[in-house]
Length: 204
Image (cartoon, rainbow, N blue to C red; front, top):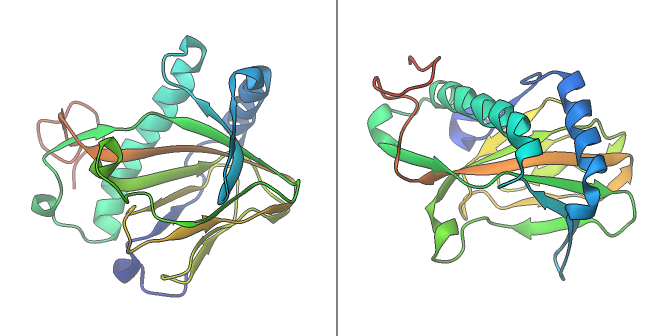
């Protein structure tokens, strides 16, 4: 990172889960890859599996979402966000696992994650967890902040999803990129930094 992290509101955390857990999650995806969708358009190409409603993914979702919640609290500390500046009630979006191959096609061109009304307009924080090391390419670039995140198993990238943080998933040159993704939403559940929140650790 080249800019002050407080200014960018972008954080990269390494070793948030074990490499063994990442490998097991990738293997589970490959076992169920026939259930995944090929996402193709003029600005994005990848394979995607929605984990919602799939019992075999419950343990993966629990580990991922618990990790996201813990690092949300750390993110608030590290970026110096006041509790009263954050939503009192939150929710999480569905969890997706995405695969980008070194085929000169898979990419997610420069975009923002909140651009219309509807459920996606409730998003306020992005979580991207990398499940594999990529030898070359596959970086997530945030050009406005001049930040690049290289895929590394166990790495968690967090940033706001608005026009302030356009980003791009670069083509994989050598290797295969797997990521887990979700968002925090304005929602109905007690935020994890509140004293009455049900999951620990929560203290700021």
